[in-house]
Every structure is written in C-alpha cells, then in structure tokens.
Image 1 (cartoon, chains in turn orange, purple):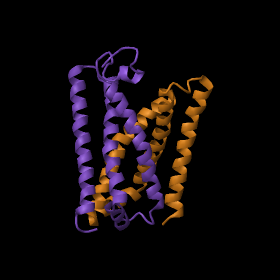
Image 2: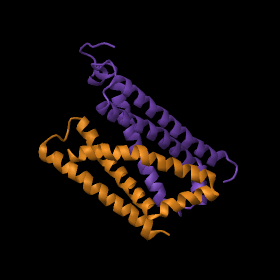
Image 3: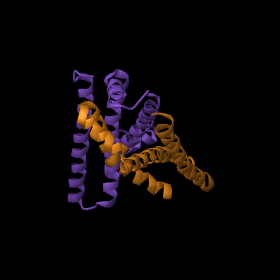
Image 4: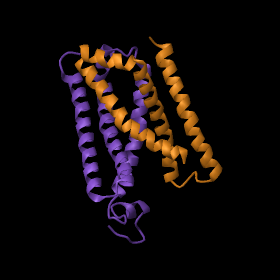
Length: 110
Length: 131
C-alpha cells in the first residue's frame, strides 16, 4: 500500500518537476552562456541539489515500483510474503541507487 | 472485433471496456513505461560515462546522433507517459464530467507544449550552427 502511494507521488513529482527540470536543462544547454549559467547556479544551490536528489530518488522508486506493477499485471507476486518482500526491495533499491549515483556525481568526479 | 472463443484476453480488452474505451490508454501507459525503463537507464549511464557535465561537453553529446536521438525519444515518450499517468490521477479524483474534461485537456496542452519546447531545444543544439 505504501509503495503504491509512493508510486503515484513520485510519478506526479517526475511528471511536473522532473519534466520541467529536463526541459529547462535542455533549453539551457541549447542557449549556452548566461542561460546555462543560470541553470548551473540553480542546480548547484543547496535547494537545487535537494530537488535533484529528490527527483533522482523519485525516478528510481517509480522505476522499481513500476516494474513491480508490471510483474503484478502478469498475475504474479500476489502471495503476501512475496508481495511484501518485493515492496520493501523497491524502497531499499531506490535509496541505494540514489546514494550510489550522487556519491559518484559529488565525490568521484569534478 | 470478434468476441468468440478464439479472441485473446488482450484482444477482448482492447477498445472494449465497460466504457468502450480505456484499454488503449492502459496499454499505452505500460508500453511507454517499458520504453522509459530503457531510455532512463540510457540517460543515467550516459551521465555517469560523460567525461564532464559542463555546457560544452553536454552540447557536443546532444549534438551527436548518439545523444540527440535517444534524448528526443526520451522527451516524447516521457511526456506521453506523464500524460497517461496524470490522466489516471485526474480520473480518480475529479468526477464531475466538465471539470474532468477541462483538466485533462489542460494537461494535454501542457504536455504537448512542454514536449515541443524540449524538442526545440534539442533541434537547436543539433542544427543551431554553434556547437
């Protein structure tokens, strides 16, 4: 149930903030100069980083719970214990993938 | 479409729900989700493998077919999937037919407009003349 709600919330966040950020990013790259600088400044601001980390987590959570929904669409995975394990796995997986990606972006590369 | 014994479960659902529609939307949401599984993985992998994430590197990457084509697909399929998903939310919570139609139409305009804007940016990166 929690994961089902998370699927909807993260989907809404990705549809609104995610696509807005993606479009802004592409426009900034196309425009270059000051326009790109404005995007880069916003993305490096603490609030910008919180939003981007949130969107990254939303992406991984929505992706994993989406796969779970596809499996359940096929009629599999409804047994209570299996279902619960799969649900918990989506949360653990999304947090882990977000940590790894941002660890790489902030730590490993300039 | 025949409803005889030979029709598959999917064939019976397509275009033939209790409201005579909805099957195509349900399927579109799932097909686009599988496409986004691939395109999303591509985007994350690309960001990890690019030598840097500055404007010059990014515009060179998105100006090449290897960046431009998957990104254009990601934009189109992403906006379509977002529209499919938000329609489910609107249909769940907004029951008055007039408001439902107005909100779904507004979302359609926003999705098409946003997608067009993102594709314009990609076109400018590829054909704008200054890479």
